[in-house]
Amino acid sequence: MTSGGRLPRPRGSPRRVLIWPSVPIPGQLYRHLLVYQKILVYALVLVSGSVTQSASDVETGLESVARAGGRLWGLERWFVPQSFRRWTEGMPERYVMDLPLAPPVLLTCSPEDCRALFTEREGALLFGEGLRRFAPHEAMFGHDAIAALDGEDHTRFRRRLTGAFHGEALKGYEAAIAEVTERHIPEWPRGTPVRFGDLMHELARDVIATTVFGVTEPARARRLGAALDRLDRALNSAELAGRFAAAIVMRGWWAPYPRIRSIHEEIAAVAREEMAARRRAPDSERRDCLAHFLSAEPDDEGFMTDEEIIAALRVLVVAGWATTATTLGWLAERLARHPDALAGCERDAREGGSRYLMATVQETLRMRPPVPVTLRYVARDHDLNGLCLRRGTLVAADIERMHYRPDIYPSPHAFRPERFLEARPGTYTWIPFGGGVHRCIGAGFALTEARLILQTILRQVSFAADASAGEPSHRKTLITMPRRGATVTLRGASCPA
Ligand code: HEM
Image (cartoon, rainbow, N blue to C red):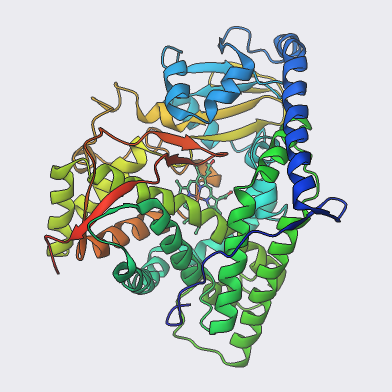
């Protein structure tokens, strides 16, 4: 994929669907089943409301904390972020959200709470278990992914991956990121409104596939691209949303999902072939993640078995795709409406600078963090910064609310990259990548990628927007995206390199 052709575009969706336990059913019937599944989930939600309330009052120890009212409506508002933000605006920095049939969730935007949350080391607060119970990560990444692990298992696996994300390794990815971007730019329409987020989705897929897998053999690259596109459709399907809702109700038990499992198998098959090809013809010049993983000898600390490498590649591709694509979409959406900031970025792009570009990426991640909250599961009774949390509670660092605190970010609704020229982002106040031992392993990669892609783009095109103040956002499951796909008009650059 580095020098080979671009990855193929998605083709039509399948007519027949497999559901557990692997029964093929016609698409028409399947759509009906989905509707029934939704009705069932909503019925459970309504019936369970009062049960949840009384159970949580008895068990959680959170009686003193403010509660966000209206269980069902809280859940509904989650998918309309503006409404959710307005709803929680008057709440104190800690509040509890009661959701039907789900454990109570404590949301906090206190820097002290986040410090306590991210630095807990005794195994009382678990990220993997939090995701299993309250996020679709098990289906997305598989149960063996790094994010699903906690404690020693997590430390061991994470240590093996870090070599691929050190400063030197990141430098090695830069040429490929710029090259893939250069290849995409000429295909973008000029002078007419375009959903830039969609273009970024394709670009980010090719960048992440190139830098993580580095598949160059064209047929294999096409298969990988097709598998990633199928995975993307599956991850955005009503089928996954229904299973996600059911998993919340079932306290983290995920029904087997053959559709995604078969896509994971296809990705694994490509990875196995790629590894075999590289062992037959070693090339020390390669600079992708796979090359880093394969370079470890069996006695090295970073050595991974082939199956571990496959699990690592899968999670890196999935975790690094939609998040960075969304960030790039928001960057264009913000810059098209802020000519001074756009001029600052163009100046950097023209002069080969990076400070203003990086500050702009940081400010975009402050105002529009793709991941709005990150979770920990309370595995045993725990004192969080003076608050007694009972086992079974979920705690969420409220990333979005933290980033809009006026005492930390004066005029928080103003897009002002300069604030990050004046001061470095705070460890527990600027948290788009979470924190502590589970802090996003790809944070440095994502920042480098966004800065470099923006720089490469602005050398050839610039952004203009309609007269609206900004695009509203929306969520399908976790990621907060521009509702109109970051619609901008591309025109010739004012700063050719
Ligand atoms: C702007 C882009 C990105 C955002 C906003 C983002 C956000 C996050 C967040 C919030 C977490 C949870 C951290 C915590 O709770 O402490 C996370 C974890 C993770 N991210 Fe990212 N991410 C991005 C890009 C990437 C990229 C490019 C990769 C890989 C190439 C990646 C790989 C991972 C992995 C493997 C984890 C789990 C880490 C662990 O459990 O130790 N992410 N990310």
